[in-house]
Length: 268
Ligand SMILES: COc1cc(/C=C/C(=O)SCCNC(=O)CCNC(=O)[C@H](O)C(C)(C)COP(=O)(O)OP(=O)(O)OC[C@H]2O[C@@H](n3cnc4c(N)ncnc43)[C@H](O)[C@@H]2OP(=O)(O)O)ccc1O
Image (cartoon, rainbow, N blue to C red):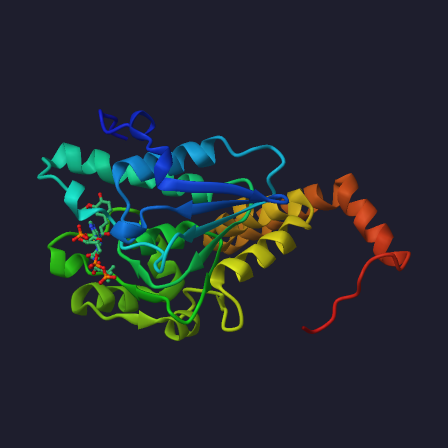
């Protein structure tokens, strides 16, 4: 992996994020509304610092956009003419930031509205759950800008919507609606009766109730198991299941259910 002067840590601009705590949920607001939350170097570095310094008592994270949009993607005013090395460093800096989100120890939920474009879409892909309100729309205008995705989109997005659909988005500039996003497996929730932020917060509180080890297994082990060959995957699953059920927290929770102390599973 290349390293270089484009180190995100030296460039953090704290004003580009509004970070708050609601109970055990950390809310992270992209705060460049005048520029439609375009992702510049200062914001990317602040995002990295935020996930590096996640407080120990935080059990989930909600990422949202301040203003009417989630994010218009890469700040095009900062896309200087780069040589190949600079370009690689820039892209790998983005990869490191979004990896911090994907491999976060707690679930990360993206609350989507308005423009979810280019790098903004790539950011949303790194979250574990995506919640959209009807105003959300998705596009990859890289084709018309003469560039390619650089924030892990070509790895993460096809796993959600398929290679052909992503290729179509990049080649034709097709814009998907919030409803289509759910139909095609990009987002898991369409929030019509409340804002995506409120719905994401509700989900953030819900996932925070789980045993931390279960959440850890879902976030860290499940994606690897799903991509492994079946034999390896089944062995990994057995190992993870054994570790989880040996934990005292699981024993307490199962005993509480058998003693009728916890809620039953009911349709919503
Ligand atoms: C190559 O290596 C990479 C690449 C990448 C990732 C790449 C990408 O993300 S490509 C996609 C870039 N984004 C766009 O092309 C979207 C451009 N924006 C728009 O289409 C519209 O602004 C809108 C998002 C639909 C909103 O429209 P509207 O509400 O009408 O607002 P505007 O008047 O257009 O904008 C207001 C203000 O914001 C500025 N702005 C908007 N988007 C951006 C942007 N992406 N970059 C910079 N500035 C933006 C706009 O210019 C206006 O500014 P004023 O000063 O005129 O007020 C990743 C990593 C790699 O290594």
